[in-house]
Image (cartoon, rainbow, N blue to C red; front, side, top):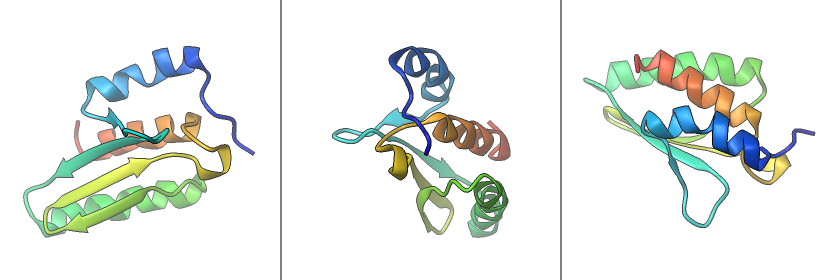
Length: 99
């Protein structure tokens, strides 16, 4: 089982994600970000790349896609909130999106 982030980890590990457009979800121990691409193909390509890492790391995002927009929420359900897996996947998403 994966452990939730400690307060120190939240203060240090989440800071780069929050500075890069991720936001804490109100009423939930989760983070959210909206990625906007040039078109549907780019958005779907991003999701495909992320899916390979998500499957490899056995950590799957809550996400939706409408045309060129991908909305993502990250939390670790079996930990009951944010974990190091969310930080790792969020950082990988930012890299894959070019930011």
